[in-house]
Image (cartoon, rainbow, N blue to C red):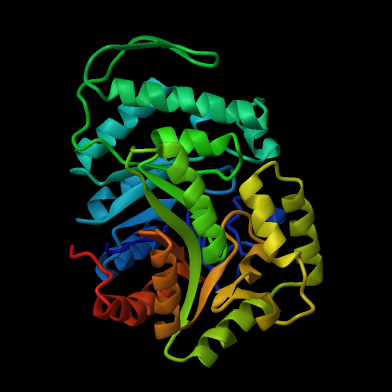
Length: 367
């Protein structure tokens, strides 16, 4: 089986450190070196397309631009690239979501993928007016995806659940092809929902053995239902291992102990089991230096010191990064959602260096 590679669209802004973020109000903190305007995001999207990535993940949250609007604006800036649109099922009608995805699919000639973000941070959820508890959010997502798939059937669809109810839900036309559903979540409440609905189950970049364990659980729950598996990672790939680790050291050196302590306090409060697993990989420790955060050969947990969500990076020579991708592939991972700092340059470093190495090993699909 070949691997499918995706990149990331930095809709909160981009820069050469982990902590830079765009702020509409500059008094709130440092602004990113590169603001997430359409011209810059189009550069990143075109670079991803040029380098052969299948799609770009576009995040969701109050800290970034809206994923639906941003990616829709980039349809005409690209020709082949797909858009992995993240959205929260608790803040939108399932019928409207089905309609939006169907419209996007037709206007883009089949280039939309959907990333379901149930949400593990109660503070962020409440900003959107969602006061459901953690497990109830996943129960609602189960009902939400049942309705979305029912609407996509092309026939009026009715459903009454504990959290959601629709009657005769329909849209202009069923999407063709039906957009694939990407779904993440590590808790006991999340895994059965993923097994029932996900086309691709996504996990953050834990060491391969831990990823393999999680894959095994989802496969057992899915039974005969086909499901693919993906991992979300950052990447620092260079011509030599020493050069790559030097770049990782620059990212680490740009972090202050105060920034790390503040971020770790916020992340520790997250209800997300996946986030708790990310924090456990490094424990918020800075005293071991850059290689002290290497939790598996060429897997670096330094990003997670200050960044929520995906907190690990592939770091090494192009060959070493390809080795680790191959190791993940050997335990069942077929899709990789990658990113780097800055996203424009790192797309080229990976595409120029790792891509040929993966092709030489017969791991890449043909586009």
